[in-house]
Image (tube, rainbow, N blue to C red; front, side, top):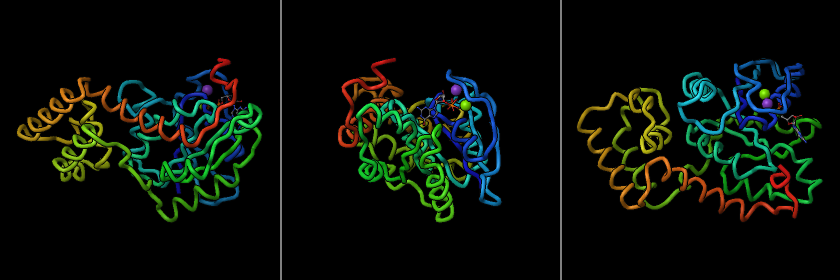
Length: 271
Ligand code: GDP
Ligand code: MG
Ligand code: K
């Protein structure tokens, strides 16, 4: 059984990796320390491996880190994703979470830096967050080794039961329509290419060339897709990448409004 450990740079991936495996990889307080993937055995669980992947903000195909992480997810198909996020910077971190959910792989959210949240006087409603996202959420503090055993335990359960994210459909309106029309159009091609359908459709809407190339679409399909995207852009009066980003941030904002109580002085403001 293999877990992929994924998160933004500085979310605490390496700290968590070291706790889970009992190893001693270098922890950095700046982004970009982990440029290659490292794997190690999960302590106390025979046959379970965790892979520490490069920190990324998005599943775009632009940076070396993004390519390594996304190719691992798509082509090596881990049994579960452990998505670690910095709870003190939850809005920004959830942007990657929503993209990972589209891969339709069993996934668990490790809500890290909870020690900071507590000492700031902020709070996060874990149960509500779990309901809204449709994936298990475990509050942890990687550096204090708090909640890590619970996380490992639930990640194994999640992989064993193949528990996939419950709601992929967090969007509505024109972007929603475009994603669904395109998903309908590319069902066979996505299957043949081994790409998760929802991920492929959203990536086409965004204009992700490697995904579009990999699907080997025919001219008539490409024409229809262009038409769908043009239509969406003109209705929303924005470009395709911004349309997707706006949709994701709108969903994140609505979740955080319900689940997060900030302190007067959150860590974000101190940065
Ligand atoms: P990575 O870039 O995702 O691999 O993150 P690192 O593991 O290198 O951690 C980034 C920084 O956050 C380091 O300074 C860690 O010591 C710190 N850190 C990691 N986990 C926690 C935590 O639970 N609480 C606090 N306060 N700091 C943490
Ligand atoms: Mg690291
Ligand atoms: K780092």
